[in-house]
Amino acid sequence: MVTAIFPAAGSSVRMGGGVNKNLLELAGEPILIRTLKTFSQVGRVNFLIVVVAAHEVAAVEGLLSATAGLKPWRVTVGGSERQYSIANGLKLLPDDAEIILVHDAARPLISARTIDDVIDAAERFGGAIAAVPSKDTIKIVDADGFVKSTPPRSELVAVQTPQGFKREILLQAYAQAAADKFLGTDDASLVERLGARVKVVASSYDNIKITTPEDLGVAETLLRSENK
Ligand code: CTP
Ligand code: MG
Image (cartoon, rainbow, N blue to C red):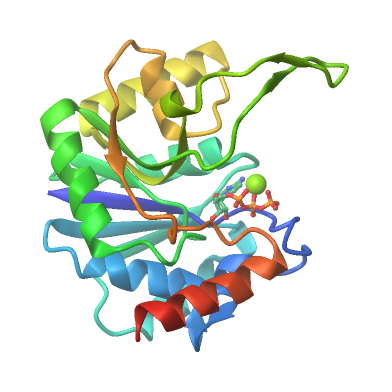
């Protein structure tokens, strides 16, 4: 079975700070709730672990308790970096979790289809990430702001979540990163360090991460066009 971990313990600095962006309303419901409902629609997902800041645990437990239709869940406390938040979430893994998904709570437009595709690929290859072809040309730059090189765009993908892994692989990757004091920007980067394969799964450009205030408007627009 599949357990999904939702990091939601950030400081939301780019959103303006102060409140957890994952609790802001999007089309009438909190972002976190929309995200959890979509994962709850996927048959193989049978457990949800939500990671929030210590002072939010009780309120988020209340919110989830009041929400119908969620798969069984637990709420736990995050850390100072996304990676530490997920490491805390991993401590609550149920014994039957063979595949672990990690998904930013702040990506509420994720589709059940992409979740299913990532699970399939994680089962087959051990690791899988949702991604889209890069629309932009990406440059490698030096510390002084000069271009060093231009990797061919055809080889670049913009990586999203969910990222899914077989249990042993992800646990080993997190243990090794902790031992090496390695801090990565996504979960796959920890797994790549082990030399394990990670399959890229085609996702949608709609699966944006709510990061700045403008993203709320963009997400509302995308939702309206999806519901047409
Ligand atoms: N996150 C987390 N623990 C952290 C940092 C981030 O659980 N220490 C979560 C965020 O809550 C978010 C996801 O990881 O759901 C992706 O991070 P990001 O979009 O960067 O959110 P924030 O870190 O909150 O935003 P910012 O970087 O603007 O402060
Ligand atoms: Mg952040």
